[in-house]
Length: 367
Image 1 (cartoon, rainbow, N blue to C red):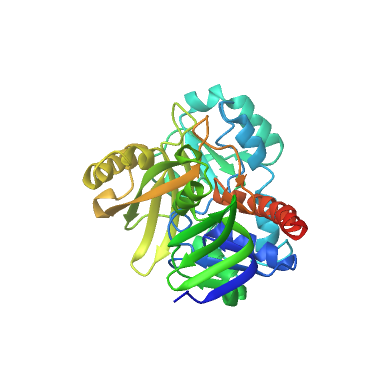
Image 2 (image 1 turned 30 degrees about the vertical axis):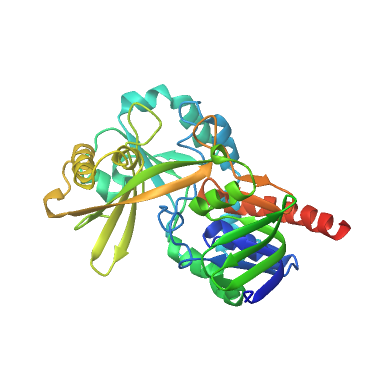
């Protein structure tokens, strides 16, 4: 027997922040849109992120990623307006864990990029702090050098997912994609278990799941890439800290965000220690992170810290420069494969999805 069918104007596959933001925008624009997620909302890449609303400062320090830095600068204000309840979406129920971050390094290194830091300082994006104003983790942790405050907020990602999803629960379907049917270059349906889903327009925002869609749409294996991370978790008597430790390159030695759980404060460590850890075993990655943490903040009580790690796949559009410089929508006839590339780009990707949907829906009507 044929599976039961379900039809709508727009079907989004993937319930991370990219898919959820696009769903909300499409519904607000009057489209009959639904979203399909195989696990719980935000699972995978979204909840594996550190929740940083990057404004581009760390990418512009040496001038090598200036295009990324310039594009990133326009994104945080859209988020902050929505978080304040006055933007394109109302995300006022979400939590900002820190209104700013810190950047710290040896004076000798920051001196070489002083012009960039100085330019950002003149625009109110960066402030050099005197030691009395340093966060306790740096002041008491044994840091020697410069500390800058970055006007980049950090979010509790789980609360953002709830703020996006809760008002549209009736528009979220749960199930895996078992098959994508394509005829004459058009996606005709998606099969999920016993359910056959059809739509005028299909948007794939499923991170690693986009590889299946890319294959079905004929884009080939080179359309996507993965950059794995082994994120590090440190739990113990650690003071709150959000920011980037940088050294001889703008890639942070470590990017640290703090989270509070029932068992105490947890530091998530990304950046260099997470990238290096992707090629190491669990125990070696933890040992490397522990050595790095003790080197950059030697006076913290590392003897009382418990360590863990987990692998996160960053699924992205393939990029010649290895790092995509913005959100990407790769269109087919009535379907598109989409990546925000960074959490902060979710609103910009939603713009692309809305524009593509308008064009593809018009084409469908003309046919």
